[in-house]
Length: 416
Ligand SMILES: Cc1cc2nc3c(=O)[nH]c(=O)nc-3n(C[C@H](O)[C@H](O)[C@H](O)COP(=O)(O)O)c2cc1C
Ligand code: SF4
Image (cartoon, rainbow, N blue to C red; front, side, top):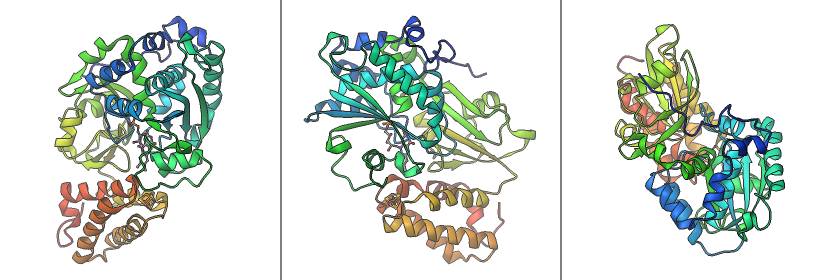
């Protein structure tokens, strides 16, 4: 039986989210008060000891990122909170914003202190506009209480937070596109280097983190022991996941790493509607890989999922039952990428177009074995030569499906 856990979500429902006083009554801002009396490098070490990997999808170690951000030379550094949450089936960050906005503000101030930044930006997807008043109120109150502005807590540290809304493009979750979007330009990725940690928003050194990565930090600073005792192997602590698709109880759950996929789907998410059989499970949103039901007894950890051919990624889990064929799922996924590719580079623009054509031919029964080979080649070229992560990962689902469900692509054999 999976054990429910409340570490990251422990403030959910525990205070009036419109009141800084209510937040402080449950211990709010004690992590910041502790942080400003610590050596920032020790905070990075704490994050590294907890082996926190960025929760936005790329799984980059948080302690290392902050340590690197500190080390970069430059004035007026910036920290950005990526609240774009554009990955399909991923809706966990919205719960953190909605249920614990002050914790996110506190986390950003700590990030600013550690990285030596003067400004923080929250980039929030257009669809979360309903949370703007909540965050603006939290920012205003934090400023009134002296947690933002000049000489914070008498430590000579100046920091302000600005809130931006995106225009609704998935690609704007990618760091360089996000930055261009805030700058008022078309939200399209650019070549790297320069990396944003050196030259990011308005050419200032920039540290970009996901909402969940940031939200973990205040909790960890006040109670690292509980976190360190959760989890399994190198996957320490807890993870916020969102489960969607043909399950009885879709939603957001905090789990200790090591909970099995079966426990997630059959206990937390209530099992499959009408007890149907699982066709496939996709991990980490549209750019994630797929598995079949043989993954059910795999523990949800970075290492175990990777060994099973998938990844934690954005923390989204999509469960598809047997009513949907693998091919129809892939066509639906492809539609998303064909729509969201910004069209700037050839492998992604043309690759998505041609793979869509071949998948449609498969559905119409007119594809040839040569088409399947071409599709595999295009997918490989896209992953190796696209300009940004969108093109690099767009065919993860197809490539993993080719491995897991070879019969679908064997045009002489049975179709799933
Ligand atoms: C196309 C694309 C979309 C992305 N969308 C998001 C997103 O919505 N939210 C997010 O946190 N990271 C997203 N990322 C990952 C970010 O670029 C970046 O790695 C992340 O925000 C860094 O934060 P972290 O280290 O805390 O995970 C996306 C990446 C790509 C390539
Ligand atoms: S990979 Fe796709 S989304 Fe990224 S820059 Fe190229 S065309 Fe645009």
